[in-house]
Length: 463
Ligand code: BES
Ligand code: MN
Ligand code: MN
Image (cartoon, rainbow, N blue to C red):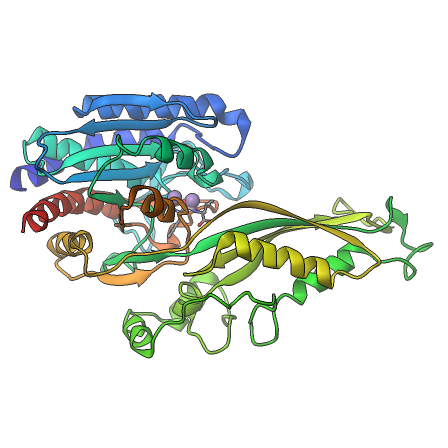
């Protein structure tokens, strides 16, 4: 891999400027207003895949946003790596909290990123991380050091639930035949503490509506006499946790896989500082389920969080009114073996059951997905471990993440393939938030690490 690494070194500047171009396109999947930009981004990406020498590059249309495919099949006896990533990004708002425009990437130093970081929506999630794979494969192809066949599948709907990708995967099982799936869309513990993500949480997402009187009412004339939907909603939501931080929905924990003491002890070895954690978030203390540490609460335990709540008057000044309706969006992060559909049903039954007669409630399910875990004794994991050790000079720690990539469980079900999650982002990179950024160190380290994975995977695959 000497020539590959040399190539990466000499092409560094161009690799960065190409990423910046990609980040200028506001490929927001959630908002139809960005449809043209989504297509522009898919087209730019397909040109990159062609220019690095991939074959059969296509922009595959779906019922929603297109995905970009390309492959290099060199030798039928080689193992095949299927790279998955996404070119769509989260909406950038609230815009006024960005220090530089979200689609006009700027490089700035931070305390954690002394070599600089690119600030832009999608810098880390997932354009920066996805593009590392394009550049790593470019380097291996240019130097004739590629040791595996490779297929790229980059979608445009990850941030809205990957619904059309699921259909594409079901209809293209032959095309997507591979030995392993490789994804960089997660994080690592710190720049000097490399880690490999071995688990993702699942997701159940619902929207609730609490309806009271048939119109907004004068809060003096009717206050005290009718149910106020906002008051009721607040009370219902508050009752979803008990004072030990446990979720009160009957049956919610029934299928949760509990970790053994040995596994929990192993987890506790990963470095974690309560003080630094609080300091980074300007908090006096943390909060969560009794009996579990902060890293456990954020990875191996299921959660329930309100993601948005609205109703009534929120404009300037005061308006004395009882709103007719109140709403909330609620996400539940799930762990193995919780079934998202079952959890959604349990939520719905419970929420309807606890609502007082004075209001009516509607629970509307949104997208969901299952949790996923990767074993650490597979050749895929071992190859990733070897790769990190070469690039960082340290053995990576296996860490379960709290985030969700629902398509990973689907890949396993439909394609029978495990996914290796080689993420290079940091929790502090502000993904989905204003001022999202991605360290230049992380970008280049990723490009450097990926070829070592191909080398080790091909070797382990033969043994
Ligand atoms: N890349 C993230 C997921 C992620 C980030 C996992 C960091 C682990 C560490 C992905 O783009 C994402 O945001 N997923 C959504 C779910 C999706 C269905 C909208 C999430 O986790 O909220
Ligand atoms: Mn992502
Ligand atoms: Mn995301």
